[in-house]
Length: 410
Image (cartoon, rainbow, N blue to C red; front, side, top):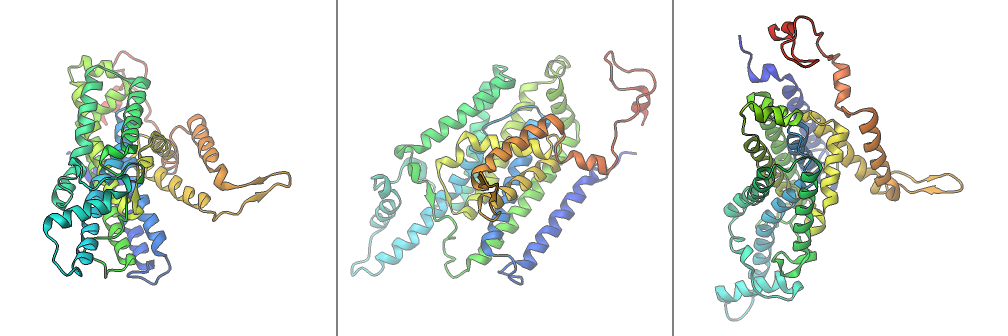
C-alpha cells in the first residue's frame, strides 16, 4: 500500500508545526497585536530572516539536491526586490507629488505630474525622465509578475547556454559568479535606469497606508514571509520526494550515468535552476520592503557566497538544514555586528566582534566542511537514531555499496 506524501515525509509536519508556533509566539509578543515585548525593528529582522531561509531552501534544491553550486542566486533575490521596489517607490513618490501640486493655484496636468515624479526619483542621477524599464512601474499586478518573470527568464537564458554547453563543476560556479558580478556592475551605473549606486529607498512605506503604523506593517510582512517559507518548503519537499527528486539526486551523484540511462539531464537542471530563481525572486520581493532600501551592493557576489555558507553550515541535502543554517547564521550575524555582544579584552588585544565576525563565520564554514559535512541538520539524524540500513543479501548492482536484495524488499 502506497503511503501518502505527508506520511512519507513526516519532517514536513514537524517543520510546519515549528513555523506555526514561531509565528504565533512572535505575534503574541509583537507591538502591533501583542504585548509589545518584541520591538518593531526586531520583528522586521525576524521577517527578513524568514525570507533568507526561503532563498536558502532554493539554494539547497539547486546545490544540495542537484549538485549545482550556484554563486549567483542572490542576484535573482535582488532582482525580485528591484521589481517590487520600483512600484513602491513610484506610487509613494506619486502620492507626495500629487499632494504637493494640489496646493498650486492652477491644477497640474497628467504630463506635469509624471515629469515631477520622474524628477523626484531620478534627479539624484541627473535625469528627469523615466527609463524604459519603468514602463510598468505604475501597475502592481505587472510588477508582481515581473518579480517572478525577470529572475526566471535570466536563469532560463543563462542556464540554457551553460547546460547546453555541458559546463559543470567549478567552471559553472565561476560562470554564475561572473553573471552576478556583471549584473551588479551594470546596476552601479547611473544609466542603468535603477538609480545606480543610490538604489531604491523608502520601500518600507506602503502607498496609501500612511495612517497604518509601521508596527502593523511589519507584522503583515512577517506573516507573508512565514507563509511564503511554509509554501516554499512544502513545494521543495514535494519536488524532491518523487521521481523527479530521484533523478536530480542521481544527476548530483553521477551525471554521466543518468545521461546514459536516457534522461535529459539539461532539462532537469534547467527546471531546477529556473524554478529556484523564481523562488529567490519572491523571497527578495518580501525582504526589501522590510529592509527599506535596495542597492547594487546587495547583489555583489559575496552575498551568494554567504548563501552557500548558510546551506553548508545547516546541512546541504536537507531542506530543514538549509532553513536552520540561514536562521542560525543570520541571527548570530545581527547579534555580533549590532554591538549587542560585548568586546573581549585580552589585555594585549581587544576582540571586537564587529571586526571578527566574518573570520568566525569563515572558520565555522571550514570546520563544518572538515569535521561535520552533514552540518547542523546532521544532529537531527543522531537524535532520531537514523543510521544506514544493514546491507544483506545479493547485490543488485555491479558496484560495492549498491542496492541490496533485502533493501529492495523493504
